Image (cartoon, rainbow, N blue to C red; front, top):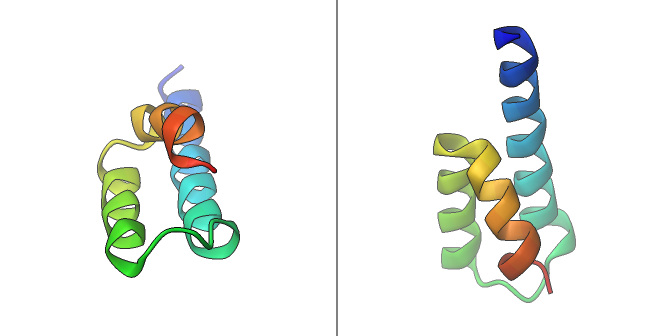
Length: 56
């Protein structure tokens, strides 16, 4: 069960980082850096928050 959670965390972090840098062009450089740091630290929670308020 732990392995599935770790894999899910990595997938969430990669998705947020990819979406922030490649897709979301409305964010400035500072916003992209902040989202990336949060994605690396709190991957699953950040993915949920980013999906609802960060994507535009």
